[in-house]
Amino acid sequence: MADFNLKEKASANKIVRGGIMSRRTKGDMIFDTINTIFMVIFTIIILYPLLNMVAVSFNDGLDALKGGIYLWPRIFTTKNYSTVLSMKNMGNAVRTSVMRTVIGTLSATFVTALLAYILSRKDFLFKKSLSLLYVVTMYVNGGLIPVFLVYKSLGLTNNFLVYVLPGMVPAFSMLVLRTYMNGLPDSLAESAMIDGAGHFTIFFRIILPLCMPVIATVALFTAVGQWNSWFDVMIYNRMSDNLTTLQYELMKLLSSVTNQKSNSEVMKNATGTVTPTSVRAAATVVTSLPIIILYPFLQRYFVAGLTIGGVKE
Image (cartoon, rainbow, N blue to C red; front, side):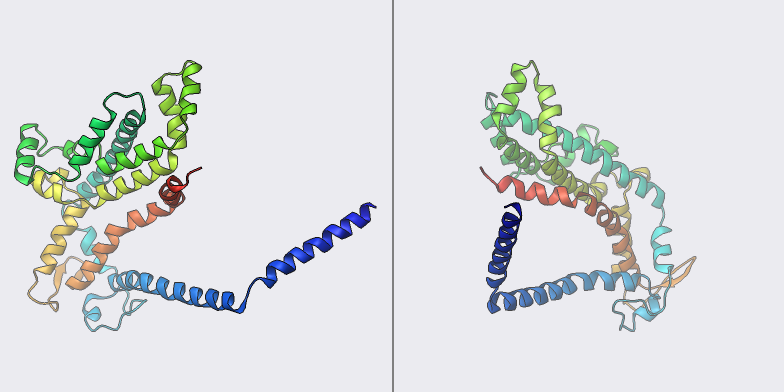
């Protein structure tokens, strides 16, 4: 009897699998083929400019002016990177960029998450008014000169804190976190309060672990913004060499490169001669590389944080 049941189940599984396989029509196979070809072409279109830029950055500058470089350098050299990495204040620039990215990201993410938790509590009296106030800041700006005068009066010019304090609570990130926290069941916090937990315990031991996907997403956005920022350096800290950043130094280098009379001119340094085109490619690679390395580690959180909030039970 047992053998008969096993044979019956095996035959049923074959029928189910056969039914599933029979559902794939010729149109489905054509669609899959076209979709695969489209994605391959799209991937090539996306990757080619990046790989070409890397190839130019490792190619001899004078030879690169001839063109014809696609995915591999024709005359390999590291002179372009030597020019970029031997810039004045390079050590201070890298150190300041790393410090502002790490400190700015950690502080902004923590403070934003704490504020979002407060505004997500239904029993908080000023929840709507404070949320409206933060939304207004997304559309209304005081202007460059008034902001500069305010920062100067607060002692934030020629000060490292100008990289951290003004962006401590980004309004958009706060709204994203608050929306996500509003979707969490109220019973979680209520049951914890019945057991005697306070708001800090609920925030650190319940809310934060549940919000890790969206927190990682917000942290990635904040880190990219901190790493790529150079305008605030030029406005507030351009007179302090020890507060310069990598992006600002590369911006000055690219500006000097762009101001060359013609692309055929060469730049002389201790390592030899390079062209503006090759230096521009090397500077772009140096700028993008840290974020490219960081992104894969946060990708799974990044995808979950953007999609999980759209699912409602």
